[in-house]
Length: 140
Image (cartoon, rainbow, N blue to C red):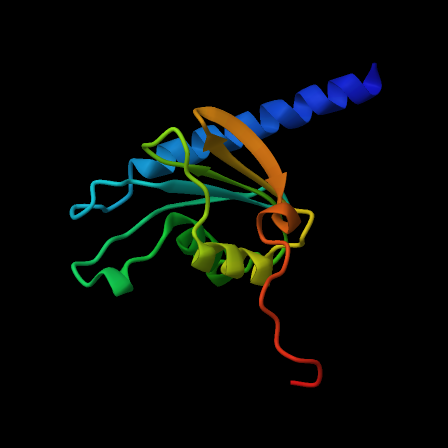
């Protein structure tokens, strides 16, 4: 019974984190694509840091919500995280390749990632999302 309650609590926590990501979408700036994305990153101390994507007419200067949340969190002094949720306008949205690599830089491989897949929320570990992140050669 305790394990069932713990799982129910975790599921509720992740649902609330995803709601925070949905709210962050409201602060996205996406005038070119109209594709607004929000992210909610939970630090190990329980603090939730949110961000929306910020587009630029020069697409290479665009910042995804996930990276914006990570950079904001680090700038605010947070360095340990236990979950991140992503929300977007489509039934399926997951972190892009650049975001996956940035997540691998700052998150433990066991960190939980929540995002919609076929209009259902899924949870995966970072190690499942990016099993072989780039890393410099030993001694670099």
